[in-house]
Image (cartoon, rainbow, N blue to C red; front, side, top):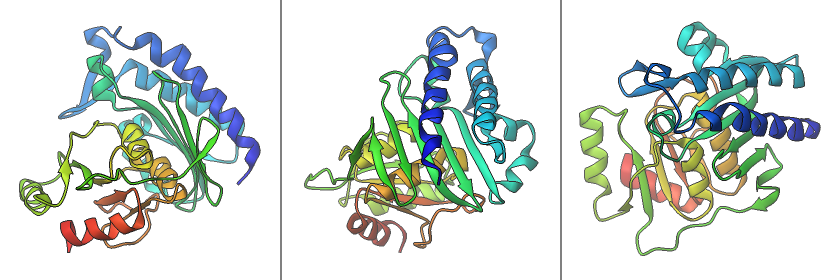
Length: 265
């Protein structure tokens, strides 16, 4: 992994946040918001952000392909090559539903993957400027300072369970299993916020049903490199291009094992 990629990627993400994303925040006209599917929103800012990010990332590393959320929405076959070769993975605005409503949190997420293995990931909060990043084998950092994931330390582990893409039967099962074992809290509806919460001791456990690469490639690397644990429900590692559903993240390997036993075994 080339260390000289980091600063150009950070500079690009901050530029896009400043010039494209934040000027549209709480300033979208109705015709600038649409639904790709039920409760799956896209805005003009998503589209413009992805175009600028794709152009910039291609200039930084021309040999890498580009797989962006909005490009895949227009042409789903692009996603078929996500696990093949070297690729940038772009989420131009994660948490678009929040952004479109004029509410936090939302973020910009970038990952670089090779053969399905995430080599580096970046997560920017445009509102606060917080930059999370990780490199495979290089640890995790927030605003340049290395971080270690920590548990919340509460009487019960704090769990944020993203059940809205589950079937009614799956939803009922996981809610029943979680009773008396976890302190349940609302999800932020934004992976760019959920993964930092697991590292910073604000949440202990998260479950995701849908595992698209732009939502999870950067976050899983960030959590794992910080000493937390994010894996498939069977304990296998997350791989870009793997189309299976289901992902479990925890602030420590100990809590991952405990949550897996309670929720899925």
